[in-house]
Length: 344
Image (tube, rainbow, N blue to C red; front, side, top):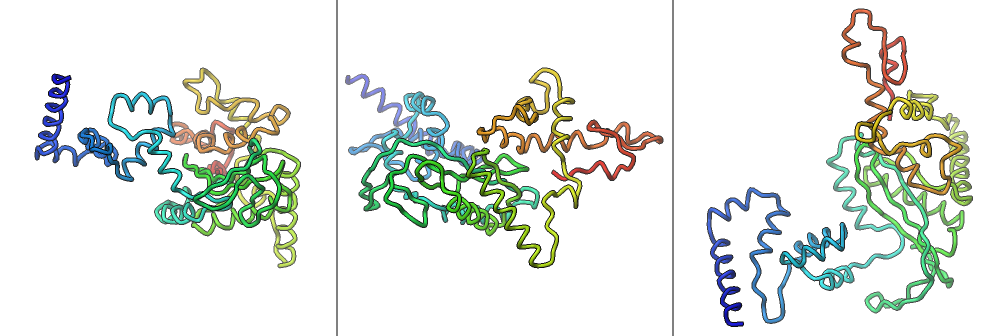
């Protein structure tokens, strides 16, 4: 035991000596912020009488690893100095997440949107319900019982067994962020869903981002809400004496569903060399699309599919240099090169 203590003491002294070395500190400054934090955390190997103390930033870094893979975090915890899962859970318990739209997330989104180019401000709104086990729980920090139907703006004396989640996902980038959740009994009522959906879209647009589409499964309530919103929008424009185009293809050149079928036909070969190796007939062929699976719609309207369509709609640069160039791309031939542009 004495020899083990001496060995640990030597390691601590060596770590302290390295941490005070000017050359080492100068080298550390060149590393990314997360790497700096992790390296310095390993040098803090000494335990205080009441255990180690971690900063908030160190806990957030550790929480990021934990959320990626709990099993990997358990392994890393044995090899490196990291906060315990209980420590991270206690930090999470201090965060108050209430049903409804999260205002703190909207504030952060507004700051992020200020530095984004216009094309990366385009987002989709995805929403879906997940089943929950009914039950009640008293939260002392909030001073209330949770487990009832809660729409954010209204609570009802009914046990909830589903949660409705709204998330935004970038079209030209891979960013995604949940922004709203509610508790409901069965499927959310059409009137409630319409009110929440409109509110979510308005709040997201207020941050500087631009909602261009909504994605959901074909549940009866969802279909009804979408149809009602389309009808209300058309009536609103008609009252103004304006024309509301239900199909953007009428006013601009947009990618059509036929182009997705053409992409699937053109993009053949092994999965390793395909542009969109996850695109299958279950995404494109209407008769084979699972109506209650949101992931297929989300994958179709993803950044990767958009990039693949844009790439294949661009004329071949070798053909374009030809003096007999008329206009050609891998999704079809056209006479005017200007017609090659598709808005995605």
